[in-house]
Image 1: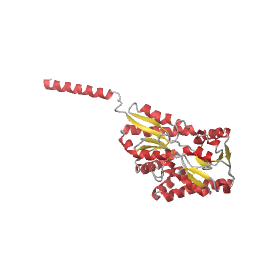
Image 2: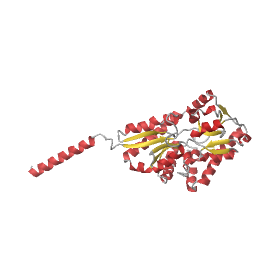
Image 3: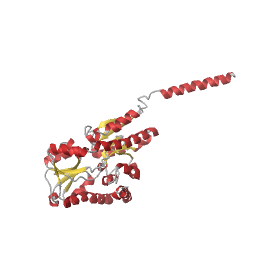
Image 4: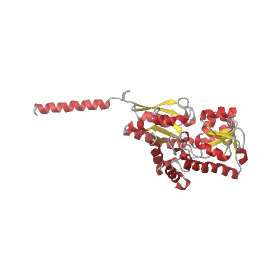
Length: 337
């Protein structure tokens, strides 16, 4: 072998060793990607507490130092109604927040509350694709549903009982914007309000009750001031995980795949977490003094149908017609297999 060939061979061997060494080096702090995360509920609320180990902890473990999701806090850090805006602007990287909190940021996204199909079906039939399409226009990546419960999720709790349609007249009921037309259609006076306002506002008589998830009802002890719960729940959970689109696009493909894969696993796992959980919550609430009200069949039908009829009308009047038509085709009861 000539001297030139020997030198060339030595250079190739040394280069190979250097490259192998570089690939084996652990990820440094400078290389690690940190995603700052907030949630619309406090850390100890079941909605976050049961979800975080399945999603955040699992991603942090599987990313092996390349990616770390850092929990920055709940609504005390960024108010619930401002979290989606913060994600869109890049002030925060990720958030768990209901779509009902940001209809002005992603018009039409909250239509998912009217869904009568499962989250798995929504993922398979194109509903997730539609959500991602409309979220991207706002600079947001739609990761997925964080609370994919099968049962209806929303309840109305009140300071005093109701029995008839007439009893709703004059009541002041608080909630986020998409619910307000429904309260008005019931004959009540709607009041825009966020979770931190619920307990103190009902306690002081600012309003007579509000729309709420059973988990939050228990967490904030609202049974102390609004013990009467209308026992005809409606709508699906609208709690979702969203991420700043530029941040998402900056991730390597294998980390995007990791996040999407863990999201799919979490959706399945959370179904098991929530199975029977609402029944358990109702029992706990009753032990604390809550009284669940059953309306007469005709009144109950009117009550529930009002939320769906007005919900669709609100979406059709307020949001892009083509988006709402697509949602109606995808998530209506007739789309079940």
